[in-house]
Length: 228
Image 1 (cartoon, rainbow, N blue to C red):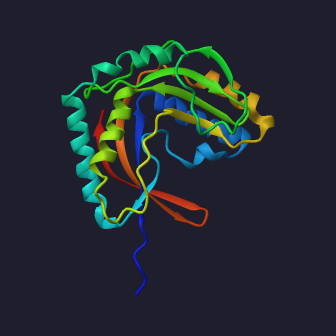
Image 2 (cartoon, one colour):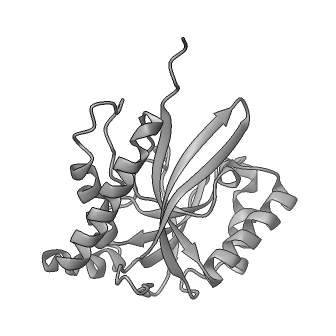
């Protein structure tokens, strides 16, 4: 009997509202004018954890771990990291480490930090738009979101069937475009600046997804959503 394939699981923070509408319109317009790039393969999101793999029967275990982590972080604020948002918003924090292909970064006019939060009091602060020759994004700071990821990884560490570690992300960003032809960079940047305002109205949802890949076809199952 063939073994059941492991489920590919991931935790995202996804925008809801005007910002998401703007980015969705940008994705549609950039696809029509420039053709597909890797950002078109995903819903609009901030990656909270990397993909990890476990048996499908483990999914309720992870949902409980996420819920426990959210409750813990909301009940125990981490005041020691409150100054991190201010430090990063001034451009002093570390840039993303895994998405720039060792290229010089071409940063542009800073976006005025605006704390976007919802009823759950999880602040996710836009820092600035960033454009390089292969990657365009909105950079964010959210010490609380990072805490949620760490708490989740700690609570989920005892799974005996998971194939790999849960990697907590710290280079928080929404990808607008990446892995495109360098000749398209200026046009995509111009379009993003015209269509996307990082300080637009937004609320956030924490979403637990399972990814299915079948050749070139990728589909997603959304297992649970929490308002942040």
